Amino acid sequence: MKPDMSNNLTESNRKAWNASRYDAWVAAFGGVGIEAQRIVSNPEHPLRRILPYLGALEGKRICSVQGSHGRVAVALAVLGAKVQVIDFSEENRRFAVEMAEAANVSIDYAVCDILEAESLDLPHKFDSLVLELGILHYHEDIELFFTAMRGLVQDGGVLFLNEFHPVQRKLFWTGGLQDYFSDKLIEADVPNPDVEGASLGKCQYRFWTMGEVLTAVIKSGFTIVRLDEHPDGSNSAIPGTFTLLAEA
Ligand SMILES: C[S@@+](CC[C@H](N)C(=O)[O-])C[C@H]1O[C@@H](n2cnc3c(N)ncnc32)[C@H](O)[C@@H]1O
Image 1 (cartoon, helix red, strand yellow):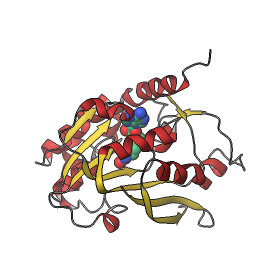
Image 2: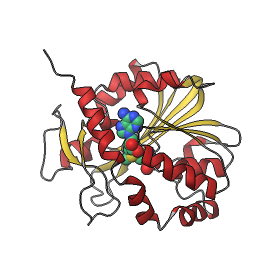
Image 3: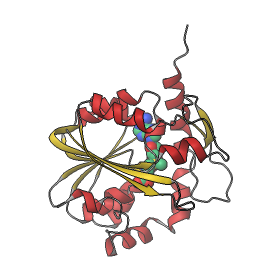
């Protein structure tokens, strides 16, 4: 029988994202209150990759997909959006909710596997979905993932994805030139804001080619309206990230 790798992947990633995560964010940002004040005084900064694409925010219903520590969510709420985060880390939720309180804004934060978001029975669909930097490689079935995204957004709504570029992640990430077309899972450390600190745990990553990403977006019912590629921070000769805008 074929092993259920999706489940293994999600479970090991969930464990890694819950290990000491609250303390890691407190150490990285200097504390919940300090980071809240930083965001209130300059909400545009955590949103710098998003704002040029999102348009007016006041009253807009936005889902921060896998929104982690909630900095993007809190900044969006400070600028008047109604924000829902969905992420499977309780430790992330704790940091985000405390930070929202300290910033005097309200956000909703559901701790849930994003592929099971339907089970949350949310009261409405969203005007916009915001996905930023480190989303797709947590999923082993990219079409299932974008189908779940289509289920969250209302007709005419927008999916905004700012993500690591497949050329950077698949070809160059682990040093030397790698196989762009590899479909293997890669085990590596969960992101640690303290780059010199001990590992907080291991994740299983599945990196996707640009063709796989775009095909999955289209097949799940979105129309791609824009795709921008941005140079890598340490090697401007290769793409480091991309921004995709798609309409439902
Ligand atoms: C690198 S972070 C994304 C960056 C984040 N958007 C930000 O603004 O910093 C990846 C997030 O995905 C979450 N995650 C990974 N797999 C998930 C899943 N299957 N369902 C829900 N959340 C997931 C993790 O808990 C983590 O917070």
